[in-house]
Image 1 (tube, rainbow, N blue to C red):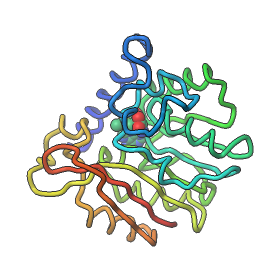
Image 2: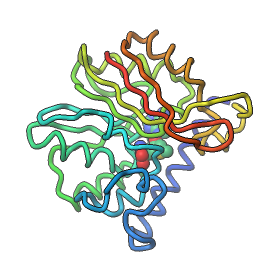
Image 3: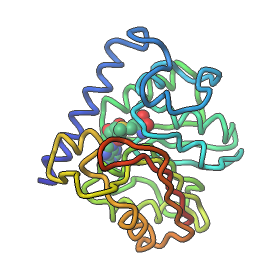
Length: 237
Ligand SMILES: C[S@@+](CC[C@H](N)C(=O)[O-])C[C@H]1O[C@@H](n2cnc3c(N)ncnc32)[C@H](O)[C@@H]1O
């Protein structure tokens, strides 16, 4: 079941990346995807239109990340790269931002967007958020936008996030949380659409604390459908 869910998730986001790669941002109004609509004033940001078009997030983690110049940032499940590019502008030339994604097509789309926009303080790497291909203690801030709900091993994600963050580093994530028992966790298609894999707030908090995080806050920011909500989650490593 776990492998089947992961394959379905990969297929879903592979197809999403190919749509933007094949059709480009010109297929629709620039910067007006659902994900992009969750950002205040994205139109004024100098980020590639196709990164905004590929936005599949459920919030804006850069709004809760408290980024400052010189920081090293990691985006778990970076998709087309929108949050990576917004972060790169905030950390500046002295900082650096890694985008991690398991889907070749999303990595290809993000690298194309990077090349077009000319970001030099950014790298997109292929890998799983359950096994992050980066050394211990090297990251100041982890961000992520609507990805942890998709993981079938969330404890591994929390453990790995804590390992790569420096002591005192910040976890600033937007994601979906489960509010009640109406969600079917065995609905594979529902997983790929960021619903069935969502866990309750108490489980999210316990997972972070068990991995070693402190100062955990989880605030819902609006409905994401029946039985689920968008949430902003912060914690300190
Ligand atoms: C809902 S999209 C969000 C993308 C991006 N964060 C955004 O806001 O547009 C989920 C992304 O996470 C990636 N992903 C899902 N599960 C993953 C995993 N276990 N490890 C790495 N990447 C994953 C997918 O390939 C996809 O690009």
